[in-house]
Image 1 (spheres, rainbow, N blue to C red):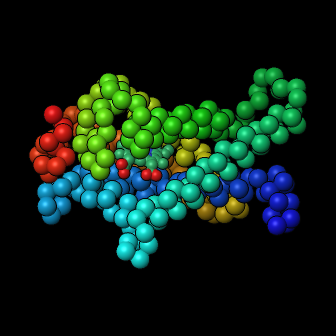
Image 2: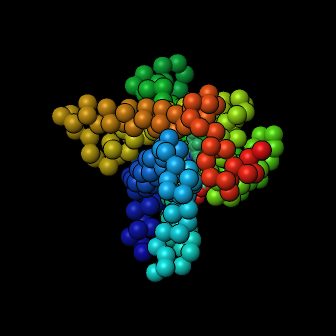
Amino acid sequence: MRRISGFYQSLIGKKAVVACTGLVLLGFLVLHVIGNLKGFLPPAAGGEPDIDVYAHFLRNVGEPLIPHLVVLWGVRIVLGTALVLHVVTVLQLAAHNRGARPIRYRGAEHVAATAPARWMLVTGCAVLFFLILHLLQFTFDALGPPIAPRANFGCVYQNLWEAFQHGGVLLFYVAGMAAVGLHVFHGAWSALQTLGIDNPDRNRGLRAFATGMALFLFLAFLSLPVAMALGVIPEPSAYSAACSASAA
Ligand code: HEM
């Protein structure tokens, strides 16, 4: 235990924690966006939107062996812990850097740093702000009209559809996904460097991976909201009666 705590106290230990938790959160984003893309699939057997069936599956995964919601809460606890560790450790590193350089450089301070690197703290705060409002909107149903029409539990397709009929909500998601993209663009590359995976022979590929990941998340996350806002996919009323009855 003392070894783990000693490792965490060191700068390299903190950087490794930021890198590993960042990669765990990146993994979550990839799974989340794949789940969202199910919004484009035709209705499942029974006429329910495929994305609703998927959300139902997530809540019941493991049953009957594992009780209802237990797996979901297990995943939430792991992700929540990763997020808290990521944020707290980044803040500690930022405080350390500021403490190590009490007098700020003037002028050409950022010669080697790329813009996304300098903006990591800013984009990180923007992602956190987005996440808080996002959870209040869809998970806790705490925002209310007109920002977010009352979310109907289990009716994910309908909830999304109604939310993205509002231009302001769509704009907020575009800005949020831009922050996510910029954060991942530098963060994924930086994490691979911290973990020592970078190497002159591999760096082009690793850079391409980070850029591809950022672009994929930005475009794939926004594809469903934009398609719903433009009405190029079916309205919820075209799907199962249970959810569309309350859509009016
Ligand atoms: C256009 C982008 C996004 C859309 C349309 C979207 C949509 C949704 C929806 C509908 C839910 C609730 C699902 C349900 O009721 O079961 C949800 C949950 C969630 N989303 Fe997103 N999401 C987006 C981007 C993001 C991003 C970028 C993050 C992280 C930074 C994120 C983190 C979460 C989390 C943590 C949950 C709660 C999962 C749970 O514990 O149940 N989402 N999202």
